[in-house]
Image (cartoon, rainbow, N blue to C red; front, side, top):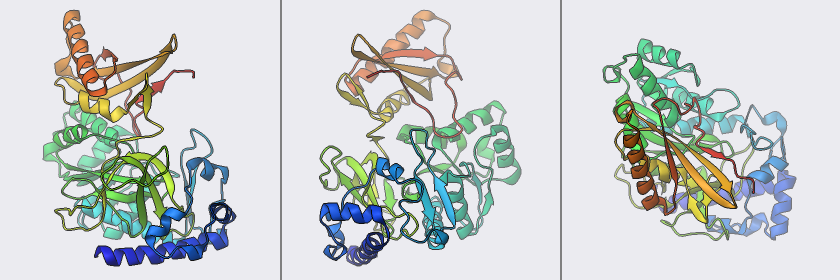
Length: 423
């Protein structure tokens, strides 16, 4: 689709969305009235900047049904966030919403080379979490065989993978690495399995982590993106070029803003990602601030698709650590660690405050080949890593090497940060 035709489509869909939420939802109507904007003010997709932002806190404040812009009897499925840091965020779907979710997830899987002949091992969690059923709906629309094993139970995952001839693996990237490690311990030669691709998302991960996954599982790993507040997985995905994620912008309109000022930023400039669901009926969102940090790129992709692309998530405004005034993202540390020989792709960050100063300890797991019984060797290695981290982060860190397989493994999102500071 040409950019001109897409803009016309987006404009029409935004106008419909704004009329719907203004007429049917008190929360949206009050926000728009406070901002002095009416549905008739939206004459082009670029007029979206006239609309006020939404935040996760606001979504929690109207729990459970405050975002519904249709009759509750039209809702056919509910998902929520975990609610570990407050009330859950609710994502409600009409039948049409489920059809759209299936469509965008089918696009995602197809971009990872999934066809009707494939066997998709869906190791994302099923239930209120959107990952499992999102992949499920997409694979079903393609016509692939679905293995709905959900997350966890690693031995069974590996057995199923062998017995049923899994060709496509879908899970978090950290769990993919764990599967590779556990399989190697059982003597599984992944090069002899029919695995060909993996769709990995739900947490930030680095290019070096992709290389580790691809080498160990002998598959092509693509990064996928989505979030419960929007629809779940299926908002954006890498194609076979593995170079930035195509945003499905006929359904989800992206913007990048300065997280401090809310000012719209130009393409190529890093900032906070904001989404508007152009076609969502159940619980639509308008200019939702995701807190994810990335940038947009409208250059032509070699695959031929014309959609705008976003860089993989560079961090989150709320995951960002401020250590003595310096902004630090876990992915920056991961990039450094995974370039070093003998270091396993498992680490944990512990932040403490002593005498009003912040201290960051980076616990780094060594691989079997990198481990040594010689104290002097370990101390030299710690100093080497500290030096590399200082050059990347411009702050001093304390590196603590730990024995192989001692950092807690995750069957979902890896918990990288332990923040013990009392501010």
